[in-house]
Image 1 (cartoon, rainbow, N blue to C red):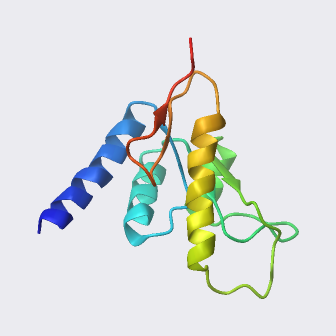
Image 2: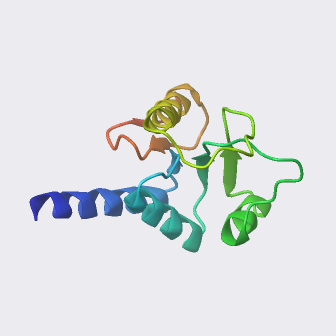
Length: 128
């Protein structure tokens, strides 16, 4: 029960940060992370999505992801090329994507706070 409450509080804290103009960075792999992403989309908050498979020719995100991209609220990136045979994400890929999300948070500069939802303690702001 305590773990469920902690998870709920964590997800709520991610959404609250987004409402304060914090940009989320994540591969949004777990069901809980996907729930956070759905709220970000619904409330039209900006975020960066890391994907485990690159982009095929003429790639177009589906539905709400497309709308968010077109509105400039969503950046989708992948560190790997598209693989038409890829079916499931491996644990190693999940770990690598989470590490990349954290690295993006470490390296981005600007006026917008950045947070990786894979680690709620990492928030980076520009050094003004």
